Length: 233
Ligand SMILES: [Zn+2]
Image (tube, rainbow, N blue to C red; front, side, top):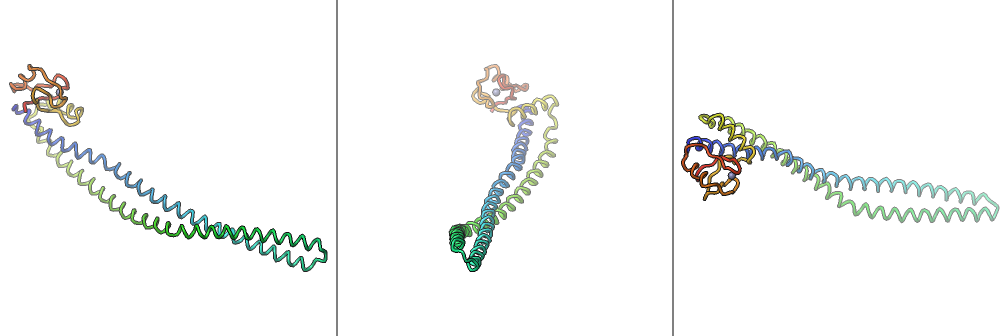
């Protein structure tokens, strides 16, 4: 094997490791966002239940006030009835009293419905609070795991990059430039074997002439189709 090819293969192996680690590192922010999004859904869920509970509480208070006002009116009507001597006025007040009593009954029905809803909501609220608390603990662990992962990936990349300089020693500048361009454009596969007269980079059959050139190991040969640097497997 050409010594340059040998050097490039060692370099490529290290570059592929760096590339894989870099891709993993690039995925970390998205992973963080995904976890945070899942947790924010739990927050919204809890907020929705809490909001409904508050609404019920406020509505109950409002209805209670309304009942009190109606009762006050009824008491006032009865007082007026005691004072009046006119039959007509007395019956008119009776009518008002019965309207107010009907209204109170309607309100009381509504209060009962609200109480039932509040009762049903209580276990849902407890469950949502528990899910939220569990989710929070889980998220904190996941986020701190991602921080650790990020710094360990960064450290490993730094290590490999430092060692990389030594791996490029003895490779001609022009060849190194060609290799680097190919490595970027061909997703980490710049130097590939010819296998049964097929370039294992683009999977196209190469000419016999190319095979002969690669076999001769006299100079660097590129795949005529994809441009990758070839060697005999
Ligand atoms: Zn090819």
